[in-house]
Length: 124
Image 1 (cartoon, rainbow, N blue to C red):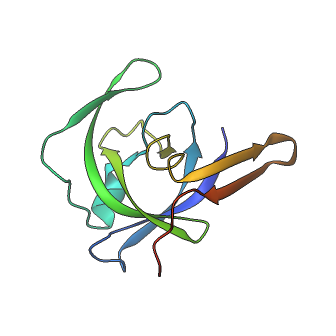
Image 2: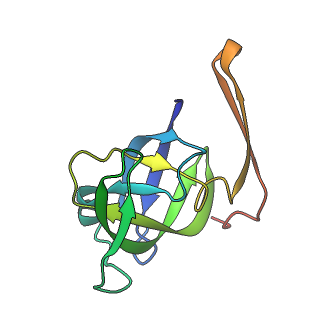
Image 3: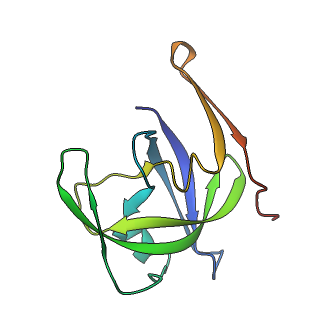
């Protein structure tokens, strides 16, 4: 699966951000990231309740919901994403929080990914 560079930004404090690579996964319902990334940029969960999701292998993954700014290719969007303390989970861009924001075209033969926003990005 293809990966792209992204930046997760604290909506309340935009000077706090973290860069990482994330896998584009059209089969993933949601976007999910390591909890360490949320901690590094000072994100606070929307509420203290955990949400349980299932991994592709059926495993249970406990997550927390966070509101943040997602920067991809210089386009910024306020979005919701899940974060998990599970160290086996890698950054994934799924349908909610990525495919809901972009028209995505993957050209495997050229190893090229084209993104076109389908909603208005945040003005800088």
